[in-house]
Amino acid sequence: NRGAHVKNGKPYFLNGETLYRVDRSVDSEGEEVFTDVEIGTIPGDSRVSMADNGKQLMVLVPDGDGYIIDETAGTPFQVISDLDFKANGNPQYVVFIDSYFVCSTDSKKFIRSNSNDGNNWNALNFYTAESDPDDIVGLEVYKNKLYVLGSEVTEEFYNNAGVFQRTGFFIDKGLYARFSTISTSDSFMWIGGGTNESPAIWTLNGNTPVKISNTAIEAALQKFSFEQIQHAFSYSYAQSGAYFVGFSLPTKTFEYNTVTGRWNERKSQIVNTKGVTETIRWRVNSLVTAYNRVLVGDSQDGRIGSVEIDTYTEYGSEIIRVFSTQPISSDSKVMIISQLEATLEAGVGNEDAEDPQIRMQISKDGKTFNDELSRSIGEVGQYQRRAIWRNLGRFPRMCVIRFIMSDPVKPVFLKLTANIRIGNGGN
Image 1 (cartoon, helix red, strand yellow):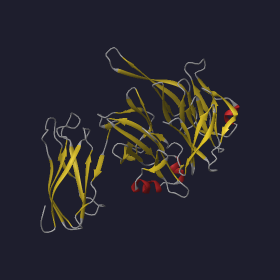
Image 2 (tube, rainbow, N blue to C red):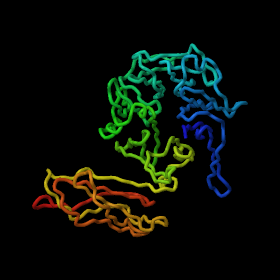
Image 3 (tube, rainbow, N blue to C red):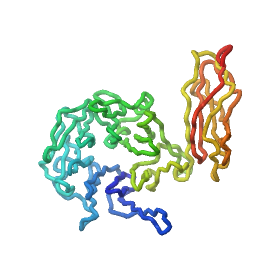
Image 4 (cartoon, rainbow, N blue to C red):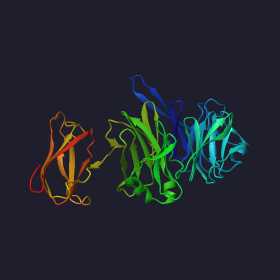
């Protein structure tokens, strides 16, 4: 999958070199039926950007061609043939604002189309970001303003009767990955930084860039090469009252919950071409919301999936959930843990996992963990089932406790309690 977009409620996915539209209907029994409609061929294998004006959908291949899809036109699929489209350099990224398609280019310029017509361009309708002579990496539309994100500086523009003018506002943080900008509920986020800064994840809070990545995320970003960072992309979705923003890199996917302010990492398990089970970054390559569903394009085989809150497998494979406590200590005094209890929603067993388990590991140094100790979460109807571990031993300075769940059941972890004796006395 190379990208996805929703126009007028209908999702479009570019899988391989074929652009599809996914239509939905309801059969005579009230069941949903999804149909993929082949739209046209878009050569290449690189990620694309998409934008629409309600009628036309524009698909842009970086350093390649632009395509206009308009199912109401006599020719519903067209390559942009206007020579002025590439008169100011090769278009790289497209957004839509105030009736105009706007594209960044590889010549430190950005261009706009004619009003509500992505097939027609004028070579004179180009603009430059002038607060800093850096390259334009990407674009973002926020509160009806156009943000031009360079490699070191981001500058704000507004539309004045078809002419994009500077507002005078800019921030000294640039964009490192063209596809990493993402709109959120009341802001936008991106992977970037300032001059001579290491990569971090930022959000715009009013007129101030605020770093939301923590030291662990930034340490992980630092391990990627510049070229790998450039291949990062972002996504966002809302589900069950929570709002998630994800940043996917070649080997890792980090996800941020804007409600709780917490980060998690998402991974997938696949069977590779050698028949070996392999853990990779989350296999999703694009994500859109349509038909009251969160639909995703797959990086492995182009399947279109749906993120469901009550589905506990991923394309039929188990989902392994791992979480751990912070180091538990008491001024580096000796601790003895006589009992540990994990309170979960019990009795969630089903026909796929009649007696689901939670596994616990414990570490004295935060590096090496002992063997897994399993406890039942409860078969169907065993709502009073308790997961208790006893006589866990002596810990000279500290301990870290890790839990693992992989059965395809509802995972609700409520709290953790322990009986701990510190030093020579007290619980």
